[in-house]
Image 1: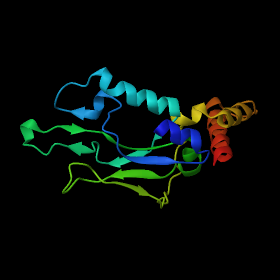
Image 2 (image 1 turned 60 degrees about the vertical axis):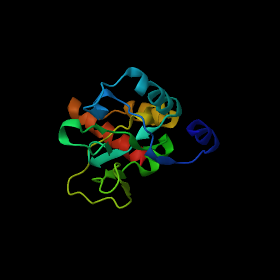
Image 3 (image 1 turned 180 degrees about the vertical axis):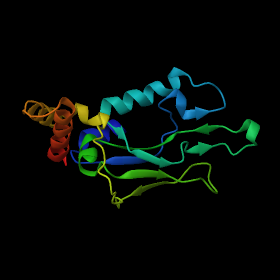
Image 4 (image 1 turned 90 degrees about the vertical axis):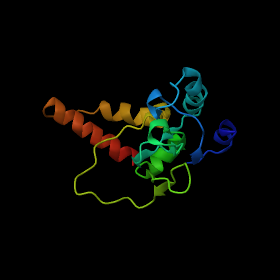
Length: 167
């Protein structure tokens, strides 16, 4: 289904919800050990389509079986993911995973207001952008520029130029 959506929409899009799948062995606490087969299909789908995970805040895990402490299992199976165009346009938005109350799943809220920070944010490379040809062209163009000064200053300036070009 996600592959069909990806093929039919040529605009920024994202999807949020219970995928009932984990991406890494670190996405579960307690319970049965994570098997590679549990992750493989979802990992392949995300990579093939070119989806990236939104920056997550608050709760580390999105699901809990709500049993007694010695039998409690936590999983990260609810996801907020977007395509490369979404990250280029809305990449500063964050997914807030709240504490589940009556449900066994965490509600996911996408904050559309970006809090103003006093310090400038560091350059963040969303992995999904690496597959975008226009991003590669920007990086190539910027990296060919001469920036005078110490090596770290030169790298810092070039990263700033990339951020400006892709904003």
